[in-house]
Image (tube, rainbow, N blue to C red; front, top):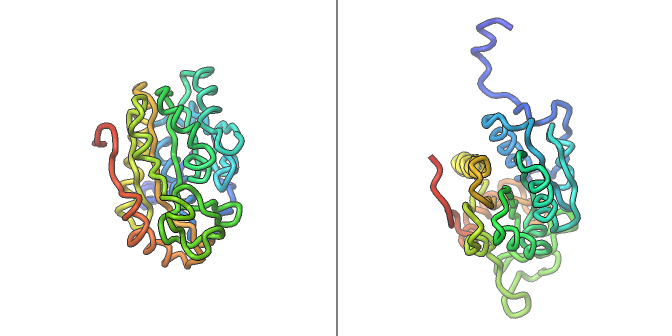
Length: 254
């Protein structure tokens, strides 16, 4: 490769992502962006060869397709439990879970909270698209008031379905949680902020500080019955009014 060719390379696939991976998410889905950000952070921290990912049921189930990492599968909502066992058996490894809101904040909320209370030195990335994306777009605990889903066809109302759960705020109350931030993916600036949060979470684990939780509000155009562009506007104009962005616990990244 010539020096000129080297200088012209400004963007390339992270080494942590397999070269022969097939993108299987729906058009406009936010998962692909966040998966790439995680890979970029692992590459930059030079820890890919020492990292174990824990996947759970949902759109996040096939991490081994995308990542050149050791990946452990878990049942629905139980990724933090499995990650706890992996980390305690292999304390020298970087261990993270990659979960959806139906997984981490609905079916597995109990596991998320207890893992945070124990202060397990792992990292959880929670993709919040406010519905069960893989199984047909049913309402989850984080579905906002007025949002239409497969099970709230007229929009979620508090009388029949209660109020949306704010998972980051709840995790931040746990003494064992060292870092909690909610980000979103809807424009370039928000993508940059999300990467900073993910990298900070991994750095916390390297320092042995305890449980780090990064929630990312992402689009699910298929589940929301919207176009990709409409879904990004929906995040910016509606979802982050309920799921407010910011650091709820821990130091601000550099």
